[in-house]
Image (tube, helix red, strand yellow):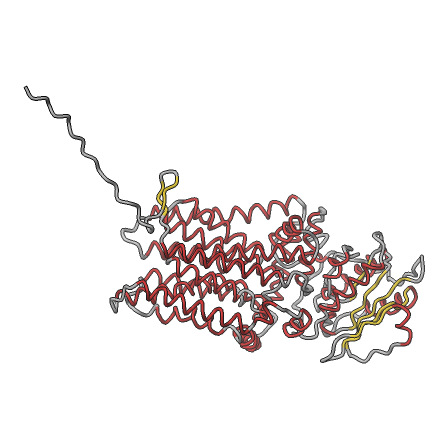
Length: 594
């Protein structure tokens, strides 16, 4: 009898995992191709470059907006009430964003620049992830490189800690969660998209353009999708709206609990609408052309490459959804710089995330057209495109290596801001720091509030921006008297007077009371201990202490630093009633001169 054969088991041999197959975590497959690996490596190199370059700017002096927003951040941390103890014509997200930076990175110039450097780096990463998710890894790294370099453009104040850097960050967060939502369809991604865009609006009002874009793109996605399910549209749009309104409600509730909600509405709407309507359209066109030319000058390659997407979208091979996405994102990003027709350089920072992501779309359209119209599918073409783009970026960096790697702070500030006394303000702050005691106070007649931040001193008045008391609106009459009484009450040891037209920005037909008071008050109570002589086209001359007695200023813009010479200063304030800003009947102000 033959012995039965053992039952044969069929063994299935699994093929070896290919290098492009990806990996699995918690049962979920993640694709990580060779293209991904190359682009991730390039992203890491880019982050290293951005960190290296921005580290060179950690001690560059602030301009006035940077200074006052950082100063407001310190006031928030001290428990001061927004719109009562200090004010700005922007929503409270601005104050709390700067308070976060001060809290975690320190109330120093280096600390604030460090915080915003990391914000910029994280924005680069979000731009990369968004473009990668929407298009491809190569598109992602092209978008990231574009954002990294263009956001450092000197003419758009790329080296600063401007509020627009925060707006750009939250826009990139919003677009990233849109890309995630488009991939997964999950409601919470739309919710997080709304939170990101809503926060951009809370930091700066012009962020509303991207809030509207978010709603529009959700509707367009629905219109271009088959089959259409109205339930999905309502659910996705509702989730997005809840996210956006939630962050707005949180900030409004905080302000209401502090008792300054009515003040917020006055500053952010009633007061700011006159600022927005001050510049005629014709003047705005001139400002736009001037700003555009200065910003694009050394960055033409990046701008042309991104705008090329509009031409490539004309090809029928490009999906209509992508066309709608790219065109609307560019258009609404541009709208963030339009309000008021000022077109200041730093306004453009808000448009850079959308602009950079569309740069990724340019590559993606090119790739799609080559595949579908010309049947060219070789990977070598993609890598050649990437290689050319990287080479052009490196060439750009080499041409501006002096700016990127060996920045001359004073030269940069002069080129970007002209004769504004920003380098001088830091030197004055250093002098006060080396002579003042912790309990000493200071006052500024001139709008260089960064000195309050440099010296860790507090403005005696809520009018830390002196231009507000010489602004041609009805309230300025009362604000001048409020400012004067606040100063006399504090009895500052140091008083800095900016005899500088831009810093003072005195508008026509305003009350001269504050200057008449200053002349009498300073003459009676102070002695000159410093003179900063700003001669056009030359380095400023700094004269301190006894040397001021024999020095005669040569420039038309001169800054005087005074120190009190009496223990009990003589008062020159009048006794007229000081009224709250919301109690004064509003009239149309004169246009702001720029």
